[in-house]
Image (cartoon, each protein chain N blue to C red):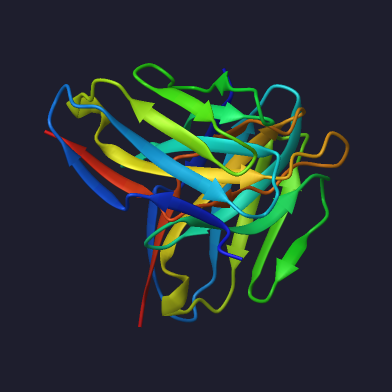
Length: 111
Length: 116
């Protein structure tokens, strides 16, 4: 059975701090890993990672995948209160039609 | 371009009642999905439809049925609601590519269902 585990479960930081969120996965016929940000409603897409060692960046957010050790990290630098959300990662199987989600990391950024 | 829409936004049912959650997408996506999200459990796949005319069970299909009415619409039905089905339900769609390196899923705003 496919499994995705995220850590920590929750995190409280102050504005300006840097955070690292972790995602480990066991996905049969793994194809890619996705990161989402979920505020009050639907998850919104952040990154898709398919190759090891290639960092994806978007502003203050960056992510990298290690397919040998089966994990990914999401970094957020110079955090802002608007970064407060639940961050979800999901492993995608090779057919591309099944996502297995982790339980999420709840990030709270205090002013 | 509305993306993925879901109705209703909220619903309260009594145990044993039935209802259908509606989902539609206007992005011409082939694949559509239904998830439920419970506190601390992340998103769990109930059913998915890789293309029009096909549906498959996901991780937690018991107590649910689905219909892929056409390419745009994918509905989720609870025939006899139970308190364990109290959850937030998300519909999603994606342009499943047979070649390529994974697929991003676009989510609807969710339906918050309470079963008393």
